Length: 182
Image 1 (cartoon, rainbow, N blue to C red):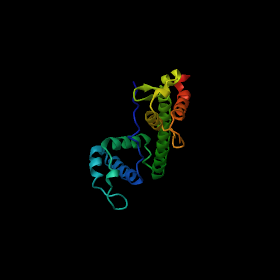
Image 2 (tube, rainbow, N blue to C red; image 1 turned 180 degrees about the vertical axis):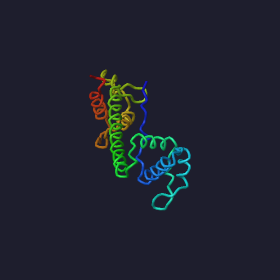
Image 3 (spheres, helix red, strand yellow; image 1 turned 30 degrees about the horizontal axis):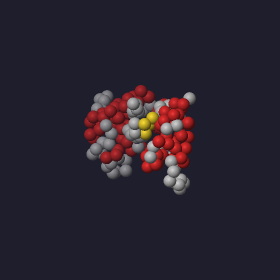
Image 4 (cartoon, one colour; image 1 turned 90 degrees about the vertical axis):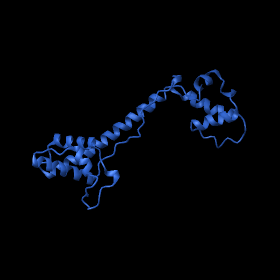
């Protein structure tokens, strides 16, 4: 049975400069009035607000209340809003932290790929590593062998003869390089 790994479909992206400016201004207002601005109300107001250019935020720029609360939390923990120069330095630190987070996510993905490679190679319900060790890869029909090669991303365009052996040899090579053999 294969184990599913969490996909990286929900990639995090950095806040744009307009988003950072808008949220920082809202946070400063809350600091000056001693009344915290609620992230849910900011999430609703960003939909009708205008950014620094005078244009409205696009739907891609809309944020959830959770994202806004997280941003406010980071601003509050740094306490760098007293001086604008330090506030800009914090925003640069945030970009560095986002870069480190992206690198960590990439390393996690690579580690997950390495772990996935330790499993035997399967095509449909056939364990190709086991079949290659028993020498039974050649028992499949030619169209099935072609589909197996395409499934594993093997280049078979250079094979001009209609024989099983070239396809079996390529499948055997990836089965030999599989980490389940070691």
